Image 1 (cartoon, rainbow, N blue to C red):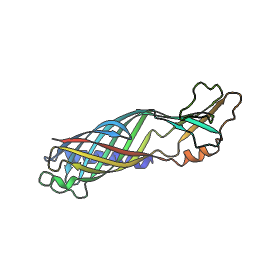
Image 2 (image 1 turned 45 degrees about the vertical axis):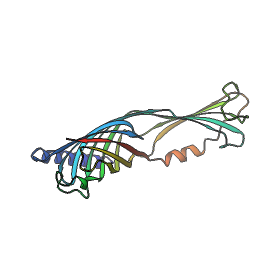
Image 3 (image 1 turned 180 degrees about the horizontal axis):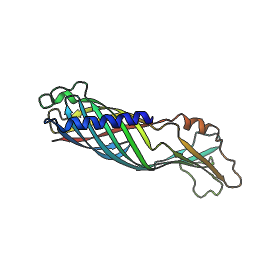
Image 4 (image 1 turned 90 degrees about the horizontal axis):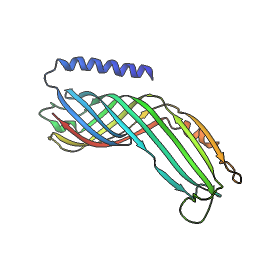
Length: 229
């Protein structure tokens, strides 16, 4: 992974040096939201088929689910937290790119690759469980319950690959786009801890390590707006 990241950085510096001597650079700024939170990025296109740039994003989300049918005897209130910032550098390749100022529609599709630094990541899953009870909500007044906490840590430096599609704005300065792909963080490290009150048994933890070890990527699903100048 380190060799891949070093290669990407070296290529970016090489492309930047070439761009400084090219009088036909076109700049673009972007705002986006999605699975990596809210973010902004910038690129400059120095060739009909290539652009380089960088960006940052931030996410802090805590969704909660009530799960009644995952166990024969217990019901769960599941809370997941994702809180982190990303700073990234990237290269964009426009396979159908033509002369940029004459054929803007040639840039409707692109492939984007690079590396990101994921700072101050807080990733955890918390399940509060109790015996099944009538109703469709968790009973917070029941004193008999247990808690399962899973704290997750991933690599700070992550290579990524994404495919981008222009949704609207052909031959206009303002454009809409959608990107999908993934960043690679490798096998995560984690810490599992359970606490229970008297009267209820802990949940089975055996499947959790195998499940977490199989998750080596983080999805990239972002939409946004761009402005060329």
